[in-house]
Amino acid sequence: MAIETVGVVGAGVMGVGVAQNVAQAGMKVVLTDLTEEILERAEEQIRLGLRMQGFFRSKEELDDPDEVMERIRCSTSLEDLGGIDFAVENVTEKWEIKEEVYRELDA
Image 1 (spheres, rainbow, N blue to C red):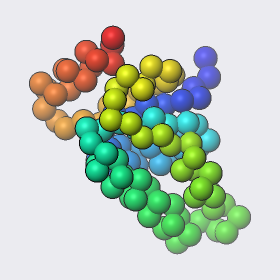
Image 2 (tube, one colour):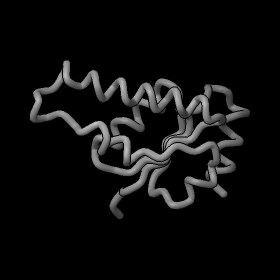
Image 3 (cartoon, rainbow, N blue to C red):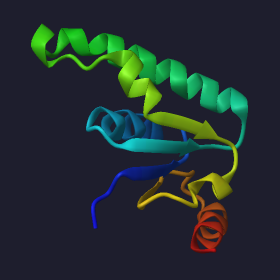
């Protein structure tokens, strides 16, 4: 089975990095977190990361930021992960929260 769409639960530092890298690899991403504000900040961080790639890659290797961003969809609902092929969990390191996320993902 080919992985085409990856769900990323948690838009903190790790989640943002995973979402950006997966999108740069050509896959679609559904990035989820609790609030629109968190997701807006995550999008800003991804855009900044894409701008910074010029410091580390040659011009020929640069990804088009608009194309990468088009592959990322943000949501505050775990229900939007229904069509994904693979999930990456990046929520806070508190078992009570992780347990609830896993329950919802499992459903």
